[in-house]
Length: 349
Image (tube, rainbow, N blue to C red; front, side, top):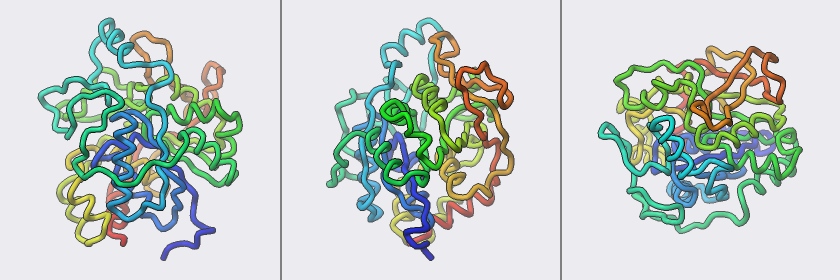
């Protein structure tokens, strides 16, 4: 049964919602499908794709699963300081980044990801799933985030699954933004991820294990986000998300029921990809999937040397004392429980 509206947890999803399907959109779908959650809105940001394109994918997802009641609010197009040209100059000094999201102007031969051709920020190519008829809500994502935590003080959890530009802007727009939220669950950072070197995605962190895309795309925003003063702060890093994959077998189980969510997944599933954002969504939905977690002081490197965007960590309270918070870091999850949750959510009408 669906919980009464007054008892459901209020959540805003902040996401670089590139699609169709894939980890970004599938994580949104999981939260939408939960009867325990009231999704107040989806705020979009540039990351895996440009924000206009990501916004269109999110709007079309909501249309296809019958959830146009959820507003989509477009956010930041560009990082606070980092830039495409700045990244090219950084690469000239320190070596190529294996993944740059919207800034990928060429792809390695081993890539299997469905991507449109490289294009500028103001171009939205025709969507494979069809272009949306609905429009994003008026205003900016940072304003929406601030408005909602003030409307429901202490009751809104933010699930952040892309670069953290919108959250940093909200924190600078209103000093009390983070403290008014119930808490933040975010997918980002990397400590010691372990994966086969033959894996398509291993190059993203094989030689730089502490560099993770969401934090590397806008390091200054990630650092501001961490220091904003949250009451509850949970990090779901690469370490906990690289192993479970969306296999054909899992897709078959999750799409056995003929629900709108299952139909979307069956057509657009990101088969074979790590379930990065889905695992962070699952941690938000049910902490019982966590099998190993611990506290660390955490920050993101913002000096523009070779370690720009890398995850920094210390024992709890053991950092340099510059505002870096103690963060509850998820190290491992119960894979069977996670997959069962995923199947159950996709099976809901």
